Length: 145
Image (cartoon, rainbow, N blue to C red; front, top):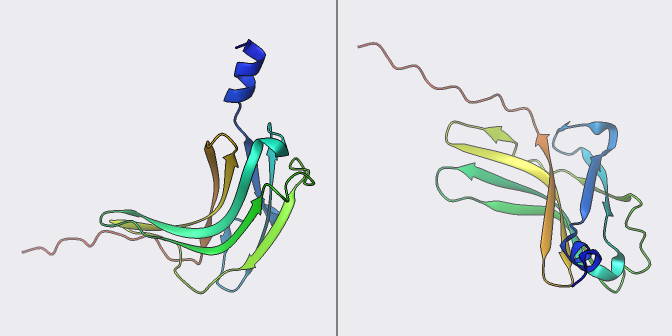
């Protein structure tokens, strides 16, 4: 295998996600408008692209995840797409759950772009944002005895 062929097969898609206005904090009911672009791969190298807006938990106990917005671009629609141009999408954000950073659990919102290559490899890129304004959790001081 030539070096050029090997480099082509090891190349990873470069995914860029941009939120309009570079805003990082939103309130429930606001419109999240964003765009993504993909470089370093050609449309014929891809089998699908998935765009989602979702929340997930981190911390102790079971981790949860729920998708609020989802769009899938299949390989049939990709040959006519110029992936290096920004592809826009938007959604109205829900009332809950709000972003939260607690002592034992964290609720995070993000935009996720998953790129599926024809050979079965998958690449994920995320852009985190805040939903709501919940204050950071503070440990409760122990009572003096």
